Length: 235
Image 1 (cartoon, rainbow, N blue to C red):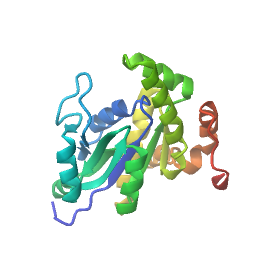
Image 2 (cartoon, rainbow, N blue to C red):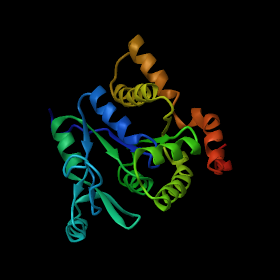
Image 3 (cartoon, helix red, strand yellow):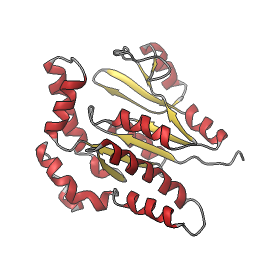
Image 4 (cartoon, rainbow, N blue to C red):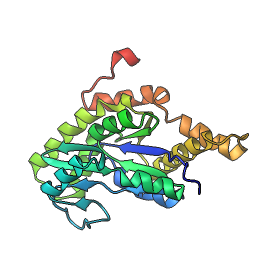
């Protein structure tokens, strides 16, 4: 692989409980040559989380040293804990001729888009607020105040949906996985200069159906369930 290979960078963001982690894990099984950037965090592991698999768990001091050394593409403080994306994952993906997938929140996504302007961003939405609340209550034993805080955070994050290139409403997992796969493959195809096959055209059409401009109408009831309005300037 030539050293000049430039990885495509895919950003995926979603409110907590939207099923983003499941979608990400499935995507990595379905698509080859796609590396996953494991974020660094100062928070403690939860449940069965493993260091180096789910996150790199580090001390506040170690995290701050990485900031000062310029080792992060982005970093943010979320609910009092720090999260960051290491630059080394982008370098390693380029060396291997792979693309890179980042699982980051809306703060981090905004930073990445400033640095890597051609990064491809995907926002995962729950079908509605009621479904999100159900998922949050059933996936863990979090106290009520934590659940309410996450629902409030979700409302704020969802307001940023129109900053993303693609919107994926995670209603049916299998269909959502197929659409996410189509987005990645379609973006890869667009960098190749050849006449697309019939299968490639179908993949491109499926990806196109998830583009922001094509899902605004579908998103309105979801926003309404969170008492959030779409920015009128974009309608």
